[in-house]
Length: 237
Image 1 (cartoon, rainbow, N blue to C red):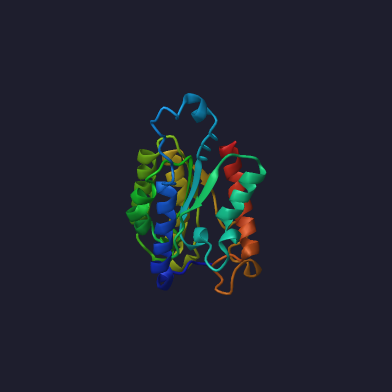
Image 2 (cartoon, rainbow, N blue to C red):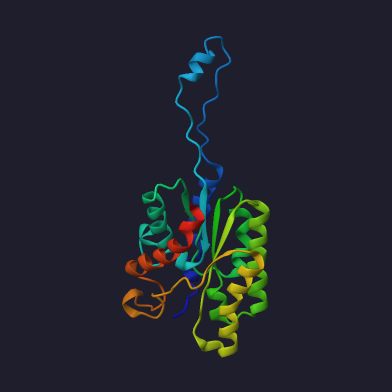
């Protein structure tokens, strides 16, 4: 089990993500200005439909796993978690800010832009591509910490959830062990909610992964969504 860096899709994914998040961040620009004439009475204003309050945001921030590479957007685990949130009658909106091929360095570079509006819950799923490239753990740790710090600065009241990841021992047993441990280390240090292993019950199981052996099938995403939901549900309630 490993990630691939799908660079050939990066430009289009970045463009699409930017357009999507711009729409989310800016909100509707179709608000009508109230008339200041005498006919615009308090009674008339009271008869207008009340503006629906925006739902608190649950933001998923990650790489191709979060982005749902190879499956329909509605089949990716963030969307499936969104369905579970709706079914539970919880008042939240899910935003998928996943980007295929993303590293922790890339995530660090775009986090301020993404966090232009406050969020209620921030789910951080990054690091897998770093591990497969053998990027020094010090850099991965520092980049993840920088993302956490930025989210805390932009949304002080947000609950942060960190998705743990594991990699095969291609880079040596010491690196693999330390890589796995850094997620719990960061969660403990920053008092984050931890998903111990995002791909629990999916990683390394051929029938639950696409032909590349890396990315979950729709059925695999259902299991990932359940893993995330089991951790996220108490946070939302």
